[in-house]
Structures are given as structure tokens and as C-alpha cells.
Length: 405
Ligand SMILES: [Ca+2]
Ligand SMILES: [Ca+2]
Image (cartoon, rainbow, N blue to C red; front, side, top):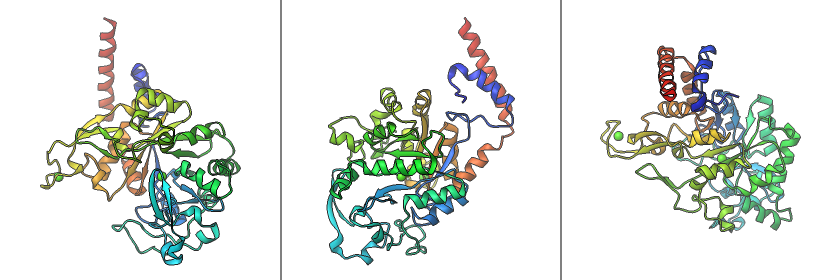
């Protein structure tokens, strides 16, 4: 492991020269960042289907990301939400009487919930593309996969998996209502992963969640690496994060426990120390890491002010702070078709390049081919690289000399 801190910058720079032509990444271990297929290659095919994951693998991702929810009979399946309405054809196959009204992270919601359907029922459904601006031609073709089916594909293709426990607090209530244990969701994930990969930190697996209690529980159950996700509602004009709107403001288990901390509080020095007591990495929404400001300047020159025009200020310092505590940083979500959150960059390629340069250890992309192409371009040594590195060495030498005074 090679961590380049301010104190070891000179050695790291020399190391980079000796290791030429490999590029010195600003990641925690100095290796190239990983591209994670967000819900598969969800920019192209209906999310969380084996077809979507397979396409992401074909595009060169290191990991595929199954979000997990639970069926009535306690089977873990891949869906972004326990709500089936938006991403499946459930409404055309089951009577409206199968809808129910439940509290989901503090929001009263009426929907077809996965935990009210058996796996046999779920297997009659077919996935649909939830985003109107994306290809609808694959609707109705693909089943909803189980965790075991996702693992089988990943192992067959030689990539890792990055499962997310969705809404653990909600799942615990539903599990008990369905006659299962309060931790059935987490325990089933752990036993399934251990059976497939062993109980090892070296397993090609990361478990992620927006909640904290479940990850702290898992820390006592498994050596598989754990990642704490951090959300927010929006980004303010001045670049600060808006964490004022539930349920995007804080982990839902904090709400239940009357813990006043927000996601932003988990990204302070003290917050990161807390997270590092049980997790191996953090997964903050990308504007937490790179500060941009809406200053009214039309940088793209199209006569319209949007997110792409924001002024880039630079690192918020969170990547550096997390790395100093030994935490990996995996951020999200990168898309070719979402200029509303392509903050400060005219093209997706420029945005990827900036985050790779920032030192993120990985990122989640709906369009993994674009992410991989940007990574490949970033690994090609540019003509000026060594001159710049030498100039940097000179600068370090000056700094070191001044410190001696
Ligand atoms: Ca996810
Ligand atoms: Ca513009």
C-alpha cells in the first residue's frame, strides 16, 4: 500500500518516477480507480437484470451493483426499492388489491411491495425501464434476479459484486411481520456471501448501505468490506450541501434513534472517525467531494444557465481526510444523460477525468463504457507528465528547503 500524504510526497514522487510509465493515482492504494456498473449498465438496459449486469461486465467494469430487497418468503432479490411499481410490469399482472400502504423511511407509501410477494410471484414479473428518456425496447424481456443468480453471473465472468442493503430498518419490520428474524435480511446476505466467497476481507465484494446500525452489526459478522453511503437532498448555490429534506438528510436508523447527526456530519473529521470504526470505505454523493459554485456565468456559452456552468472550486478535502483515516472513497452517480448533476463540466468525459484526478477509489456509473473510456484516456501518459513531475519535485525541494530554515 502506498499512501501519498504531504509528508511522503517526495518519496511518492520518486516512486512514481521509478515506476514509470505507470501513472501515480491519488487513490488510497495508488492503484487505478474501479468502475462499478450502477444497477448494471442501467443507462442502456432495464436496471437490476442479468442482462444489464452482463452488459456492464462486457463494458469492462470491475464490480456490478445489485441493490437488495427481500421477498415475503425472505429471499434476497435485486431491486432498487421494495416498491415494484416503477421498474416491473407488476401492475399489469397483479390486482390493485395487492397494493398496500406502509411507512417507508418515514414516508407513508401505497405500492406493490416486494415483501408482500413470494419469490414464485416475483419470478412472473418482467423488468421495465423506469426512465422515459432511456431505451424502452427491452421492456418485458428480463426476470427479476435473485442475489444467488447475480453472484453466479459475477463469478462466471470474474468480476466483483457490490450489494446494497436497501432500507434495513424497514426490512427488519417486514421480516418480523413475515415470521422471520429481525436480522434475516443482513444474516441472509452474510451467509450467502460467505458460501460464495468465504469470510474474507479479500473477497471481491463490498457491502454498502445508507444506514449505519446494519453496517455496525455486519462488522461483527463478517470480514467482507463495508461501505457507508452518504446522501443529501441537493447542492446549494455556494457549493455547500443541502441536508434539510428527509429522508435524504440522515440515515433512517438515526431518525429512529433520535440521533441528530446528518449525512454531512458523518463527513466531518469526527464523523469519518466514527465511520472508520466499523466501515472500510465511504460512498458519498459526488458533490460532497468536489466543490462547485453557481455564480451566474455561462461557461458553456449556450445562452442557458445550468449545472454544467458552475464554477469549479476544487476538492472539499473529504477525499484526502477519508484517505488519511484509511477509508476508501467510492462516489456516485455518473451518467451520460443527466446534465442536471453534471456539476461544473461540459461533458461526462471531463467530469470523470476530474474525479479520477481527485483520487476517488471508485465510482458508480450508469454508462460504464464512458467511465472506462475516460479511465483509459487518463492512463495514457501525457507528453508533459514527466516535465510536470520534475517541476513538482523542484517545488517540493523548495518547500523542504524552506522548512529547514
Ligand atoms: Ca445502489
Ligand atoms: Ca450554459
